[in-house]
Amino acid sequence: MTERQIRLFGDPVLRSVSDPVRVGAPGNEQLVDDLIETVQIPGRAGLAAPQIGVGLRAFSWNVDGDIGYVLNPVLEVWGEPEIVDEGCLSVPGFYFPRRRYPHARVTGIDLAGEEIVIEGDGVMAQALQHETDHLDGKLYIEGLDPEVKREAMREVRQADWFRAA
Image 1 (cartoon, rainbow, N blue to C red):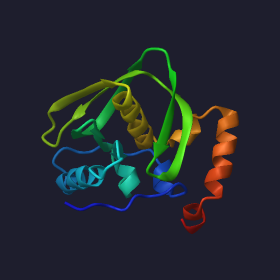
Image 2: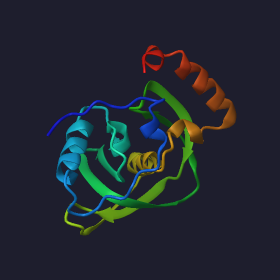
Image 3: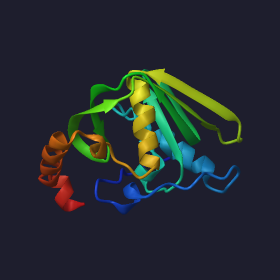
């Protein structure tokens, strides 16, 4: 297992739609191990494969001591969207208010191709939505209200890591 470096805002892999994971493909186990290892660092709720430079539909989570992964997730959401503070490992140091559904479910598969279902509310629902967005080439900043997004982009462009990326 290896903790992988996080790709930052501006990296093209973060803007690309991820390809489905093929069951039994070489490298799948290593990818899952790396996703789990990298998400276990304190303060991390989720990590999508594109964030470590891999354009495959896979992510891991670490919410309230529950750590796991899913391949080829399909997202369902319900409830009235609520404003929540959200951050992203690929946009480090920033949290902005955005709307997320309070309940979410992801259906996908594990390494053996067996169906798994992850469901949650609160932070888990937020993580499921956030990580699935990454697999669709979307960063959470894109979902901000327009006025907040303008301010967020201004702040991000001034970050030391942004100029170095």
